[in-house]
Length: 221
Image (cartoon, rainbow, N blue to C red):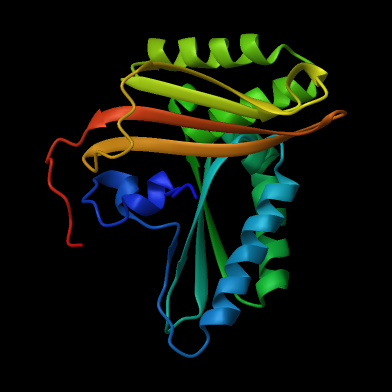
């Protein structure tokens, strides 16, 4: 049996700087854990469905125990689509989330400056090309070259499914540079997206190595 470990979960105890220091959700509860977790899932699902073309890279949720408020940080490659003309889209989204959660919601839109170095956005881009009947090899190679040109120390891309419309599913992997998945100091960004093609679903996995952390220290384990 293969022992697969998620690159982000594997590094949760590692000391990171900036936005990578935070978890996907920041809150604490002993009694209402299941209810609050379900609330997080509903928020993420609603934002993902509503903003399918906005290039959403990450959704971070923070909850204050006393005030009952929710702060949602949306990291996107296309902030104009999320905000809308005069902030109309983000105001509408805030109203929908407040109606969904029955709580006050604050939305912060943060731009992803280099989407070609974000693993999820790269996987999403490849999946969109596959759904548009593009060659999987060309899409993978183009994404890998773009990430390497932008300064990634290493990139690995894997597609699995009925590639090219063949009868039997298979996996195709391309990589360039160093992608040390067992090195905790290495800042490995991981993204997964499924392409829904006429021949079935094709899974796209992307690993991008941003290099070794400057401090080189691992947190408590």
